[in-house]
Length: 74
Image (tube, rainbow, N blue to C red):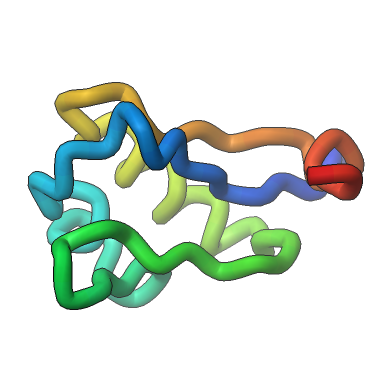
């Protein structure tokens, strides 16, 4: 069984292209500036699949999936 994961964004690297929420609109929203709004919780298995698609679509490599326990202190 794989560990629970969370989606995180490097706000400095993000250029607001919108590829992440264009690819996975059921998981990611955007704010008025085009920056992604991510779920602040562990992802279900289905959501993790959507998150992997969004990570792959990001031209700036600003999105990543992390082990949910690693992000507990951030």
